[in-house]
Image 1 (cartoon, rainbow, N blue to C red):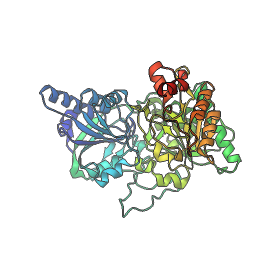
Image 2: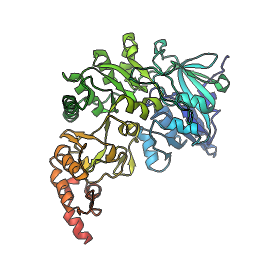
Image 3: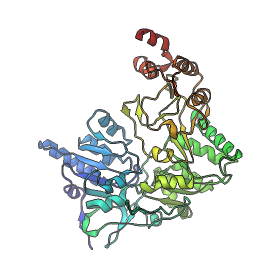
Length: 502
C-alpha cells in the first residue's frame, strides 16, 4: 500500500476540536515533532476566527515542546494525561486552564483498551519506517504507541530520517491480552524478549505520512554530581552493600530501577565506582546518559527500558557503538512498568521524593500539597511491587529554609506501607520491621537534617499518645504554613500555634 505523503499542516487538518489524540514516545524521545506544532498553529487560526479549538492529549509520559509546549501556548489543550514535565504546561495546569489527570504510567494503555476514555480519534506516531502491510519500526521510545495504533480510528505517521537503520532490534513490542484472556508476561530476566521488534497498524487507518528530519536526543544534560547528591549516592550504595552482607539480597545482586534526574545519576555514579556492587541489570522506564556509561564499562550488563532519554551527544555515541545494542531493549510502558514483572524478577526501586513525613508517607508530585510539579509517573508502579523500595531526597533545600522531612506530608503519593527505605545526604532510614513510632525516630535520627531534628522531636512530644500513629492535627502541617508565611520552616513555633488555638 502506498501511503499519501502529507505536510504537517495537511495532517493537522484531520484533527478537530474536542478530539482524543494519542502521541507516541515516552518523555521527549520518540514523540512526534512536526504535526503537534501544526495543530497548535491551526488552533491559533481557529481562535482568531472566534471558534473554539482544544484537544485531549494522551501520551506515554511527558512529551516535548512541539507537543506540550506549543499546544499550551496556543491555548489548545483541554485535557492531559498521564504525566508532564514541561514548565509551561505545568503553569497552565496549576492555573486551572488545562484538566490534568495524574496516572500511574503502567495503567493508561490498558485503561484505554478497557474503554475508560472513550474512543481515540487520531494517533500521531514517530517511526523510522513503515512497510506496505503496516509494520512499524519505532523510534527512541515506545511508551503507549502499540496500544494507540490498536485503538485509534486514524493514524498519522511521522517518518524521521534521522533515526538510523541500526535501531532495528532494539524494541520488544508486547501487548498483553485483556482480562479474562490475559496470560503471564514471559519475562523472567531483564534481558528476556517477550514480543516482536516492530509494532503494527492496520494500513487502512493510516491517513498519511509526514516526512521529517529532526535531531535525536535533545534532552538537556543534568547538573553534575555535587556534594549533596554524591553523599546520597554513597549512602544508597552503602545500604545495598550491607544488604548483601546481611543476606537480605543475593550476592549476585538484583535488577534496579532508577528514576530521572540529578539524584538518580548520582546513585548510578556511586554504583559504578563501588568495588562491592557486582555488575547488574536494570529494569527501568528511562535510561539516561549515566546508564550509557555503565553499559560501556560493563557495570550494567543489560538495560530494559521504555525510553532512551539520552542527550544528543550520548544518543549519537550509542548508535555509533553497535556492540552496545545487544545490551538494551525498549518496551511499552505497561511492560517496562508492569507490577507482575517487577515483583517476579525482584527489582530494587529508587525514586525521588519532594518530601517525606515521619511515618514514611511520600509526596513526589505536589509542592506544598497543591502545585503540581511533574506527577507520580512510574514511581508507584515500582514502589508498590519492588523487592526493596527506596526514596531519595536531600535533607534540606533553599539554604536550609525547607526540610524535606516533615511531620506530615502536604500531599500523599505513596503511603508508608509501600516505603522501605528513605535516603538523604544525612543517612539511611530503614523503616522495615518497625512500628510507626519507631519508624519516626529512625527518620529523625538518620534522614532529617540536624537543624530540624529538635523541631521534629518536639512535634512528636506534642502528639497525643492515643493510638497507633502519633498525630496532632493542630500542628501537623505547621512546617508548611510557616513556610508560606515566612519563607523559612525553621521559624516554626508549635507552642505559639497551639497557644493561639487555645
